[in-house]
Length: 77
Image 1: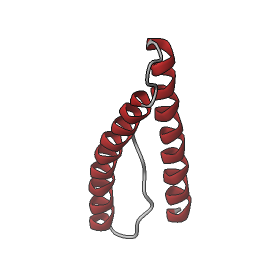
Image 2: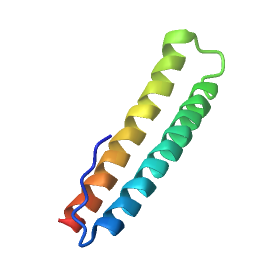
Image 3: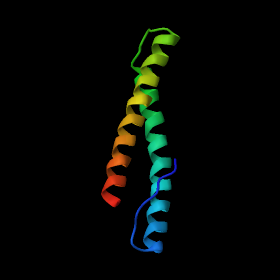
């Protein structure tokens, strides 16, 4: 994910970009674990229904993350 940050100094920008990279890696771990959790709630459902639970969860979390990053971006411009 590419994300440009309008910062006043180059060092602040580098720090922010590094923290964003780390945050994105942790978000992906969290998102995937939440998807696995949603999958496990399916109980006796068959594969397609379980996959729908998981991928709906992943899509919703991706949507939320995108909105969050858009807010940060607009605040930095």
